[in-house]
Length: 182
Image (cartoon, rainbow, N blue to C red):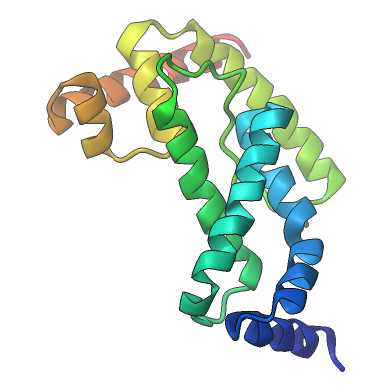
């Protein structure tokens, strides 16, 4: 049986509530989901908890899974993303950039690309940490936590327009810092 056909068969069996098929899917995707989560939360215990919750929620909702042409793992990563956002929303203190990193990289990225991205990320991280007050908060909430302007406005008790202005100013400050530090 072809690998994709095998995966499709496992997914169909899991949708039909076959626990063994879901366990096989878990074994196939757990490491990838964990890496994705750990990269975002940078804390082993939180990453393990969130990864576990991803699969609990996936099992509970597997009968709602719809094949869209996207790989099954993207559905799992969407669940993970929502849990990561919830994780940061639940924290009372602003998460430092050292604790939270946004990643659109996939596990298929080349080692060279991953190394270059890591260096770039560290360079940008240092610049973001130099931002003050609301500018840093908006950048973190928008680009690390993935919150919408409306969500950020509610958190900061400001209008969406004010959040957009703060973001624009913060990005200009970052651009200036990054240009002058080259």
